[in-house]
Image (cartoon, rainbow, N blue to C red; front, side):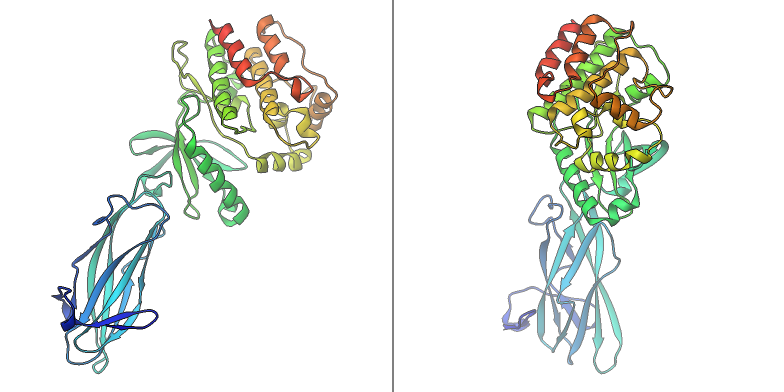
Amino acid sequence: MNKNPTTTIFHMKNSNVRFTTIRGGLCCNLSEIDFNSEIEEIPVDKEIRQLLCVGNSKERAVKIQFTLKEQNEKFRLRMNPEIVTLKRGYACEVEILLLIRCTLKIKSEVLIVSKNLQSNLDIFNSIRVKAKSEISTKLDPDEITLENELGSGSFGVVYKGKFRGNVVAVKKMRRIISDDFDQMKEFMKEVNMLAKFRSEYIVHFYGAVFIPNKICVVTEFAAYGSLFGVIKREEKIELKVLIRMLLNAARGLEYLHLNGILHRDIKPDNILIFSFNVNEKANAKLTDFGSARNVNMMMTNMTFTNGIGTPAYMAPEIFSKDKYKMPADIYSFGMTMYECLNGKFAYQSDTFKYPWNVVNFVTKGNRMQKPDTIGDKEFEIIKMCWKQKAEERIKVEDLVERLENLFV
């Protein structure tokens, strides 16, 4: 056996490798490269290899090139060596290295192009390649179909779509996300976090697409929209149903806090409605987890923002640029509860024309008055949520318990 740093070349008569003749006087030990021959499901984002042996049974030396029939952004297939020259009677080992980037079934071909060094003629052979990956949260974009647009924001556009027979919500990210290394790193971090969630009160996460220009997040679809839509359309919901929805959102928040995770963006827009049936266990769920980056971007851009938006739900300590902690989520929940029970947005534009009007109001310790539409018990809970001092706010487990008592 003859070895150099990159290629293993050996004499075929001294080998027990069984070869089959192919075109151009070459021979090969495989008719198909099956990456699942030794492993049932191939891990995503981990390179694995198979060995292919190719020999020269011709009289003269032949130059052989190994290449992929077609390139694909969903996986990387590379050969080592890519080019080798073989004398008569000699063969070489070729590493076929596969890296799958998403949940995928692969059917492809490796081309073996041989050139006779005297005649200079090219002869083409091909070997089938097949592989099946594990099921992962890194999705194949071709398994996702988009239907109608549901909404848009600074992050991108949300569509109703289909994924493996399920009706889903597809949040397509704007291009800047994929072009910016830091943003992409943050996105991957958030997706990895979403993949770990196991709660019936948090919107189910199917996975995400990481392929450049196709980056998106796929979650379960809420046919009835969000509590924001209910408030905007001035719809009336039975009080007990609404309490159930708020209770479920609080349970979702409790799950996060017990696992040391901050939501960072609690608001009516991020509580999705799955049923108006009071007996439905999870008739509402939390979605759209924010990040420190989103909060910081919002603070930076707030001066130039038209309308109030997210600042309405932000705790006073966040405006002071204090570190975001769990009580800030509780404050946001209190504001959300106030708006949902009152049936309209807290800070009306006639009084609070600009975001900084809200900031000044809140940081001075002011809060909205109790309207007739909110009962005394409900308002007591709201007041416990939006206390000025973060350490005095109600803990999430006590919040859940009080809402459960309201629901009974």
